[in-house]
Image (cartoon, rainbow, N blue to C red; front, side):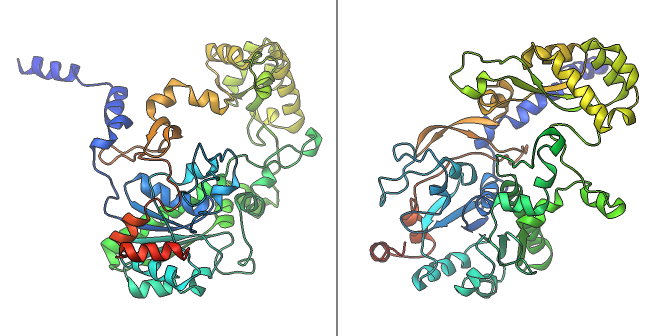
Length: 457
């Protein structure tokens, strides 16, 4: 009887897929606690690098207070397009302007206040808020907040337990420190663009990424620094910490084996287009037919592309069998022969000729049957409409309290007990002035009204 009971219990065990779905379903996140609840973060940030750092903490439940310039807000609200006021209003002070879409991805779940850092009244507000905060994040040029009297050395005297995270382009010291940096500059000097794009014999040049990788990667690294500093404070020292993150340094950290290759062998890792200098086949090929020939989007009317990965010798044989070319499989049976530049040119030319009369989906179907790793190159519409990413919450429809229905990317990681979550996408400039400045800075309604009239908040 005991064995039958144990067997029945084992039979009722959910599969790993069912267990993960039940555990991580993003729709159930709001019924669970938050990992960083009670942690207050003062975000004195702009553009993407600094704001994304703070927003990652906000996804985990931290109370993030974003401070922007009065009335017009920070620069990123005006940097990117689709900023019509009827879509995403900027502020009640500037009704004719809207917030650009680039602002949305880096500022969810935050409270928004406005304050002029340049003025003594604004600096006094920052000090009051920092005294009651766990973390300050800022990404102005090195030493700027020190000159304004609200840098780490000043604020740590007010709050010795404060974790102060400064994110900059080139760091706070060294010969290049005074230069400003943006994502594209960081990737360029950090060495990333030297390896992207096509070499000259392919008719190409270095190519930049169209998403802000250095900014969002840097924001994540800043969040990691902050979590480590909070752990050190709460478990070891009892004191706060000053942390620095250099955007260019961070890009260099991503260079994989490029620096060891140069340091040991003097070889500079080169651009190799959509292929790979070390693996073949491991790249993107063109498919001659469009998946959306009737689309109104000109880019979708063009041919499609698909990633093919068959660098293992056995996989390469199956790939050649699928293409119907046994001679190539025999000629390049070993990987060392395939990876040579001239060999890759011949192999990829063969693959693109085979795919010339097919869509990327048709190519994928044939490769799937042969058990060859592949993935059609998707655009944002294809990602947004795929049921896998919708079910997992990577793409979510958010009922935003200010802007209504809004499609947004969800947190990229999951936690069983304290899941991250998306509460709102953004708010207008100064939307939480009365709540935050009254509650935390202790300003009366009369003081708030006076500071607003003076354009200090």
